[in-house]
Structure formats: C-alpha cells, structure tokens
View (cartoon, rainbow, N blue to C red):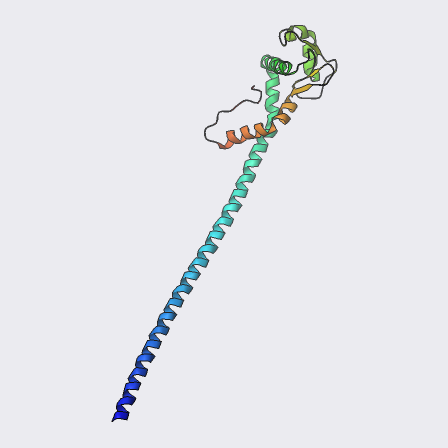
Length: 201
C-alpha cells in the first residue's frame, strides 16, 4: 500500500510537472509568436517608410528640375525684355543716365570715358554734351570713339583704364547673377514677395 501510495504521489507530481512544463512551453511559444509578429510589423513599417521616402525624394528631384527649368526659361527671356526697355527711347535714356551717374560716383578719377554699343553710340554722339552735362559735376566724361559689344547699357572707366564699372546689360546680369536668380525664384515660387528691380540702387 505504501509503495502504491508513493507511486501515485510521484505520478501526480510528474503529471503536475508535465502540465507546468507544457504551460510554460505554450507561454514561451505564445510570446515568441507575438515577438515575431511585432518584428514583422516593424520590418513592414520600416520598408513602407523607406518606400515613402524614396518616392518623396524622386518627387522632390522632379520638382527641383521643373523649378530650375522655369528659372532658366525666365533667364532666357530676359534679353527680349531688355530689348523692350531699349525700344522705349525715353525710358532707356533715363536708365543710361542713371547708370552713368551711379558709375561716375563710384569712380574716384575725374577723367572718365563712357563706352556704348554701336547703336547707342551713334544716337548719343551728336547729343553727348547735353546728355552728359549734369551726370558728374566736377568730372569730365568723354565719349569713346569705338563701340563695345553689348545689347545695351554703358561701360564707364577712368581714362587710364585702371578703374572700370561695367553697367552694360550683360555686365550687370553677370555681376548680379546670384541676386537675379534669387529674385526670379522668389517671384515664381514665393507667396508674398517685394521684388527689387535689376537696375535699382
């Protein structure tokens, strides 16, 4: 009887231990499954984020290219717009006068030479004394005999050619290229912009 009771007792213990082991194994399996599901979800989210980021980068690249193409189209149209400025003779002469005054003030020399393209030179030559009379009091501005190659504007230099200020259209576009691109960009893509003109002081 004692042997049977002892055997039953050990059998019960073994059954409880077996049940405990099974429950523990089941719990571990459940936790492992949860971890695998969470890991799979995290991997899926990371993959989705990478795909979204890649799509955003591709879209941003396309938008940047389109913006640059728009900016370049405006830059390429600029010479045509400047030609319209030249076609309005009165406004264009006022602009030339303004550019000469600005350059003359910036050059310390009192003996200056103004250079124009062939068309402007031919027009200004018979009118030069009147046109240049009030540009730089105390300074003499001589009209160059030979024209320069430019679409408009003026190049002013000291007579010894040591100081030059290129206020031709091409010279100003090159000199203010960074500011010009910024103005074009702001005008095309910003909501509220106060535009500063190319030939403003």
